Length: 123
Image 1 (cartoon, helix red, strand yellow):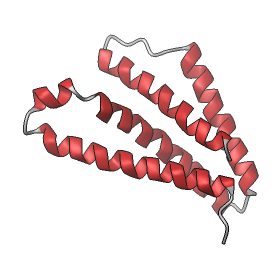
Image 2 (cartoon, rainbow, N blue to C red; image 1 turned 30 degrees about the vertical axis):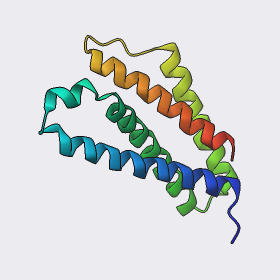
Image 3 (cartoon, helix red, strand yellow; image 1 turned 45 degrees about the vertical axis):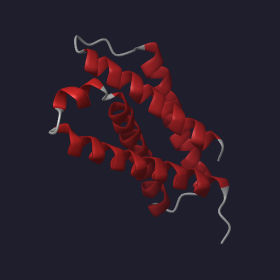
Image 4 (cartoon, helix red, strand yellow; image 1 turned 120 degrees about the vertical axis):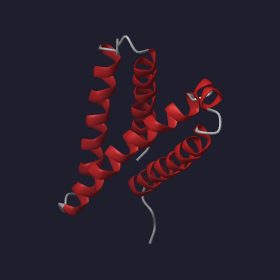
């Protein structure tokens, strides 16, 4: 069976989620060895956590649409619209917390929404 662009995009996003999960687990395993060092270089883990979060949302939304017997193109378009709304909202109203970690995660989340949106745009 030939894979269409939407199938390819979902497969890519699923792979992004799985790779992020692996990297997060590696970070967690090393955390107790030297917490100060791990948190000093936690940027990659934070980025992967954001990708994992957004990819999970998209995959669940896609699976729900497919189980509802909706056309694949309609599902992908709906997901792209939802992602674009999140990107616009998060860009217009950026996180402004007293926690620098929270602000950093919000920026990584915006990047993750954008990366995954761009994957779906190719579909």
